[in-house]
Amino acid sequence: MPRRTSDEIVADRLHSAAIHLLRCLRRQDVEAMEIGPARLSALSVLVFGGPCTLGQLAAAEQVKPPTMSRLVGKLERDLLATRVPDPADRRSVRIAATRLGRAVLRRGRARRIQTLAARLAPLKRDELDRLAEAAELMERVARAP
Amino acid sequence: MPRRTSDEIVADRLHSAAIHLLRCLRRQDVEAMEIGPARLSALSVLVFGGPCTLGQLAAAEQVKPPTMSRLVGKLERDLLATRVPDPADRRSVRIAATRLGRAVLRRGRARRIQTLAARLAPLKRDELDRLAEAAELMERVARAP
DNA sequence: CCAAATTAGTTAGCCAGGCTAACTAATTCA
DNA sequence: TGAATTAGTTAGCCTGGCTAACTAATTTGG
Image (cartoon, rainbow over all chains, first blue to last red):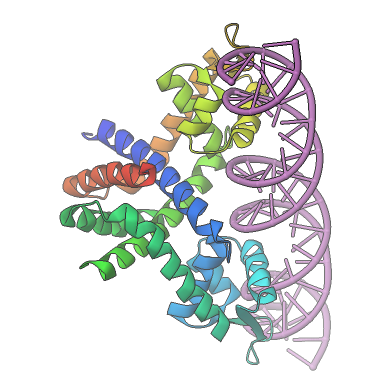
């Protein structure tokens, strides 16, 4: 049982860093207030992964169905996504991004780049690479069984 | 201006990874529901940094004073921290962790380790190191001007 | 073949944790 | 000393998590 202390330290720092990074990003990102982070993330799943059912979307975003139902409700209200009952299994709902949704996602990404560019720019090339690798690791850790 | 595309890709992945990691951690961490993440984080500033004013605490946690005021209110209600008006400048309030607060923080950390250990354990040593470095970078990026 | 069990989504209601605007009280400064 | 500033609080709003309980559709088994 080596590494117990390292695991603890890394866990703590990573947790803290993630909190602070997201707080900082959200402040600036949502400042331009077109769409909140949860909706932005769900929308990007729809845009890059294509249409899917509500359940699949909830699973992809790792939230419970009621939460996703409400998020999709707001996307729909803002004309960023559509709900279409699945003709094959009429319990299901197919959810798809609208043209506007794709446009808003593009704008959101563009804006996020602007605000993040200034922050990532001072990093050295290899630091940036490390962050990219770390992102992949974090995703893996988050999605582990 | 090279690297524009890299910055964008890294920003996006990092954002997404941070969201998913925190969601996963919070689910398991708050499951044992002793204290929420924002309060845990503020409490740890008090424990490791010592007592400070509300304003300083808000700045350290990168939130606005009203937000911190409410968080401290809950910490106080749960007997995890105390508010003591500063005798020197009676507009200010000194906030300190209680003995119970320190104990709860220890328990919270211990629990987080348990749940995270299983997730970090499969990582190779150098992957863990990379995460540690990345955490530091993220903190720097989050706190940049 | 129909009744029971299962599955997909929704609704209602709770909570945490962000924010701004507007206020009080204390201090500083002209 | 009176005005401006500063620290914190209060009120009210929003997003985004959850569970419990419901409806409607489908599957399953007697």
